[in-house]
Amino acid sequence: MDAEARRRQLVAAINRVVGGDRAALRLVYSETSAKLFGVCLRILGDRSEAEDVLQDVYLTVWRKAASFDEGVASPITWLVAIARNRSIDRLRSRASARANVPIEAAADVPDASLSAIERLEIGEDRARLRDCLQELEERQSAAIRSAFLDGFTYEELAEKARVPLGTMKSWIRRGLLKLRTCLER
Amino acid sequence: MSDEDTIGAGEHHDLTAAEYVLGVLGPEERRRAEFRLASEPRFAAEVAFWEARLGGLAEGVPSVAAPAAVWDGIEARLSAALKPAPERAGLWQSLAFWRTFAIASAALAAASMAGLVYLAQIPQGAPLLARLNAESGQARFVAAVNEGGDSVTIVPAELLSGDQQKAFELWLIPPGDKPHSLGLIDPSRPVRITLPKSLLPQVNRDAMLAVSLEPPGGSPTGQPTGPVIANGKLASL
Image 1 (spheres, rainbow over the protein chains, first blue to last red):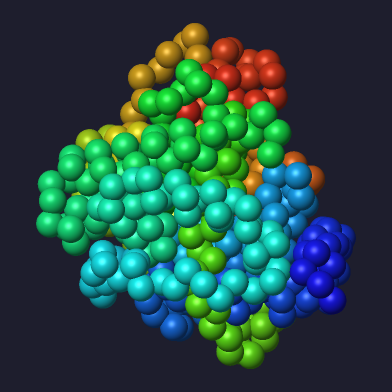
Image 2 (cartoon, one colour):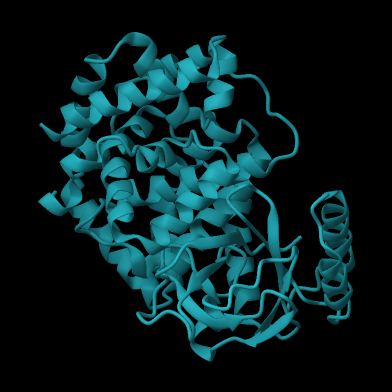
């Protein structure tokens, strides 16, 4: 099956979940859980917590499937957003601080090895994003990547980079403004 | 993407949607952004814009096979959710939490202690609670879903100035959904509100409760029209 067919299959499965079809949820799970587990694990840094959140993610998919709109987001974009949001919610509700992940860690995420389905779904947007990120200052793009991938708050990012909070906010906000201008071109 | 998905030229200084998607907001700011997401279509469109554009960053994150126990847990929770038996979570533990929270709050008015006593009289088994905070982070209401899950009791946690010109309207916002009115509440005493049957499946721990100020008689549009003075998520503690 080619990537487009798999994408359509995923869209159809999510639409079947709306009607309470558990086999369809199982299909969505088997197609995407490894990707989403990777995303949760990256943000939470704790396996058992990531497993717990991953369950929440698919229960959210079960409940929210009706809100999936193919015209607004690709299935992977939609699912990754749910996984990140659930992970960040968990992170913010934690009482204790989490293990230190240096800001440079964001740089170690490899850029290659896209699966065919991912390439198809986010290929164009991704290429654009890569170009636009390259137009930013290094520290701006590093902060933005780390925020997205590791779920750090402004405060945490500032602490990791050893700069004042206002400086970090200004790096990221200026970066986002430039990014928006570039992405809209 | 259509033009509707892009961001208007006039909004170039409001980056809240981008900051929300990026995940850099603190817990309170994040909650406010979630409320806007549920109640402002324009804000939701901006969030969708950034999710689509920034989503590519996740692509380099390596996939990791999840253990089989995760799917088993999902199945078990789906099956449990289909049964009517409510979760017998420790309400007393929850109340202790609220009480501790309440006592710690210097601004707490005497009225709210009466409210907490009232809450304590709700039978055990009420599984879901929410603390509805103002923008400042101060608790303004606490709410509990009652045993049976078909009504909610909302209790003021501070004395709010009684503005006769405004009505206080309670909203339920299921994740990814728009606000549904639960009716008007009294800011000076505990109120028990029966939940509409159509909303019962949406009353779970991901849903948000919010209170907005509306014209007398409530929102004329069926959606919040005035400022949101407090909001918070339902949680089972």
